[in-house]
Image 1 (cartoon, rainbow, N blue to C red):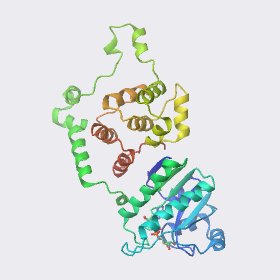
Image 2: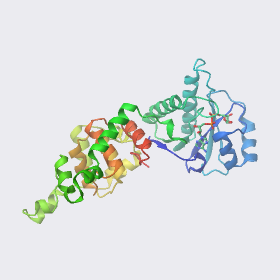
Image 3: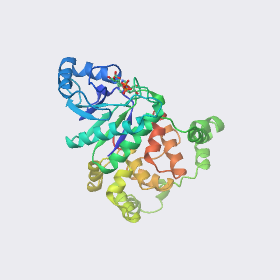
Image 4: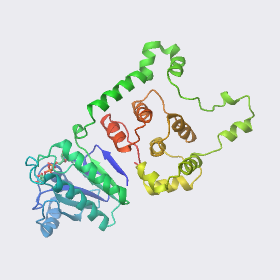
Length: 332
Ligand code: AR6
């Protein structure tokens, strides 16, 4: 826990281990394997690999990272795609499982995977992605490890056409920029307020009739207080919440134990999603950390879309955010 999608060159990541999409002979090849050998240092990595080769398809072995920012390299040999009739899917799943088990055996806390078999070995990218995410998600539910899935190209994550269209329509309909165009800048604020049913949060203006003390009392609950109260009211356990929020256990206990802790907006939102809050409750929780959901950024509109739809699956939300090049929810 957590599972994080990123778009990057895996050889630049400072994690405990990066996974190499290797061949059974553990020889230097092309693709991500070539990049890893290049950055780690060919001679040293070759020497370490020679001692461990050959391996079976699906098996995983570990070497030091040498010149890489990562401390270790876990090498796993993915299956070559042969039309799907030669247990390729099961073999690919075992690559992820074995690499993750090995990482846990070595007490590693963060591992980054490329999309194994999705290059030279010809696995259909979408299928390779589904197997990767399903296997990683199942693993992080049980183990205390942060797993990055590194995607080199955009089209590995396929958000369903229907979902994409529905989100596009929502953004188009609700974006403040569209409303500005429609109603003009002057009238914009009024129209935005009319168009959306966010309940106004307590502001100093709206409470000036009451005393300052009353006002301060309404803002007395910190983010941490609110979070604890919401968890208790729902009868949820802490592990359930931090797992569902895709955030690290240590970060969660920091938020829980430090009353004045100021989370990042994405962390606050992850927790709102985990608690399945309504839009209004989400705004209130965010406000306790000094944030709000606006109508002017794609990120906020996408989150609002999912909350309105009562779709609280953080992995689906992250795939959509990823496909829109937005920051993701969960620990970063
Ligand atoms: N960072 C992250 N992902 C990358 C990078 C990178 N620097 N470079 C490529 N990818 P591949 P395979 C992605 O071909 O299909 C080698 O010759 C790439 O876009 O590296 O398992 C080995 O020695 C693709 O999505 O691995 C083997 O013989 C994914 O990594 C054989 O290729 C995997 O593509 C293994 O083939």
